[in-house]
Length: 152
Image 1 (cartoon, rainbow, N blue to C red):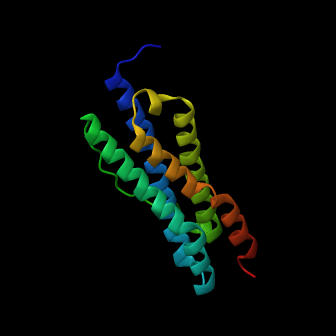
Image 2 (image 1 turned 135 degrees about the vertical axis):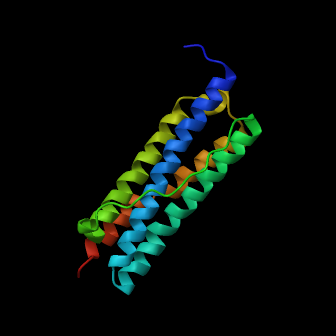
């Protein structure tokens, strides 16, 4: 399928924006879980999950904004979404956050595999995508470890 460089850049930005939105949701969900945990578990959540998602969210936003600016495309403002239902409890919030972060990571992986970042992107964009994915890499194992010990 033929496309223009401008259309390719916009497609890339749109895909990155979807990942940013997923990370924003994950961040909100982790914040809600934090509020429901005891001090020890909340500290572990912050160290093992929240910081990585927060850093990935910030890096993804900066990558999106910088690439949009370099490409002459409109920058997008991201607003945090509303959290899920409080009845899901800390475990539900953590599960939901990890699923959202997984969707973001998967979307970025598909984007990287598409070669679109190479064809219409640049070195800074590719580095940003790689850094976000690296930050998300250990989340599932950290979440499993935290969830395994909740309530003990």
